Length: 150
Image 1 (cartoon, rainbow, N blue to C red):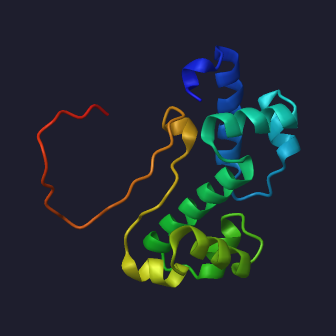
Image 2 (image 1 turned 90 degrees about the horizontal axis):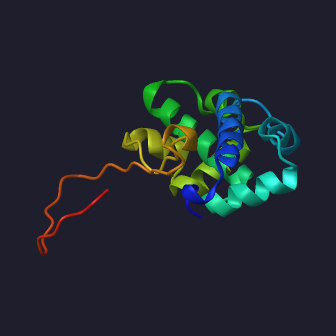
């Protein structure tokens, strides 16, 4: 769904929920609390969230937590358990399992690789447009000449 199809009030409510999620990523988050913050019922919040993003709130939170962990893995020498617990994961095992599912490598392998890839930026900072940054080695691209908007 396009954001233009949301009313101004719905955008405000969605942004409130996203800001709350972002500022509380390291805490245990409850859909009931997020729904209160958004001023919607939990069912309406979940329906609109999935309608816009194509993912559930739990999936979004997990991807944001993993992005925070990925950044910490590359910017610090903290132990994996410390990164996991400070980012809202309940154990190193659940963190490692989620990390490997998302990044297709272990946290240790990701740290050794040293590339910040496959991350989900906060939706409220990107104007509700999900963006994924990925860094690739330099390469040549061949094809026809055309103009790309975006």
